Image (cartoon, rainbow, N blue to C red; front, side, top):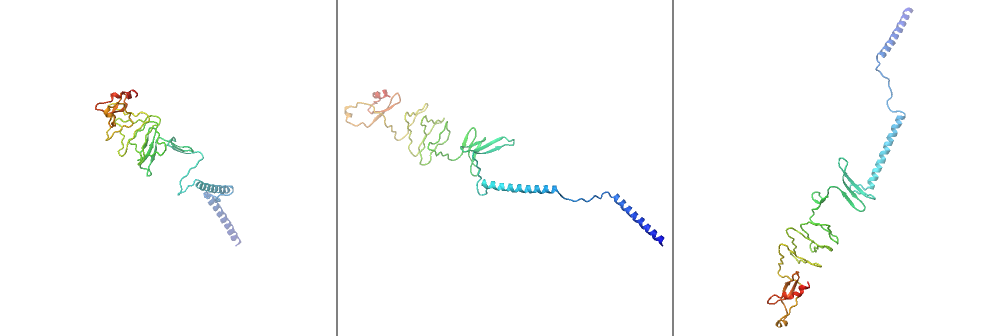
Length: 277
């Protein structure tokens, strides 16, 4: 009995040793089983992450505060206008795809300057062109062009226009204070006043000249006032009568004077006026 029990114990030990060896061999044949490591940030890495998150939050708060301050200072609102202010000037630039300057608008304390190839001003709806300017010409397409200055409009050179018209119940005045006033047209110049008188006056000479045509005065009554009267010795029968009819005489120089009318012309006898002209 003792011997069999000893054998059983030895057999049990052998079996345990074989089991342990078999277990070790199983562990050796499975190298893919890795060790388990903890997941996450620890130590200084975790503290740096928290610091950067806090810095990002502070930056966002500062940006938001600056944005609100700029909106308040610049008066940005859906109900108010856009106001740009500067102590010197405000300049707006336009550039092309290559970065070259194509247009510039400068609002300064003394003037507003625009530098561009073409300046256009359109109507409220944007469809009608009212004013355009470039290097060659300036065009205004409005129905009326009004100058309200006390001195009127001053033009340095010639003016080309199909019509010059004054407002209703106002006078139209073309004046050259120190030089001549010239109106030229290849097919003639017409000055008319269909509903009122037409007055042409000058401080010195008023010259009507026609090189190839005639000067026509067409009216029911033509009056030449302030003409000098020629001296003519009346006959004794006419001396007591008042002279009512006169003859218009013209000197070689072009001067016009009046002479008492007779049965024949008396202009030749009034040569004394022509001598002093």
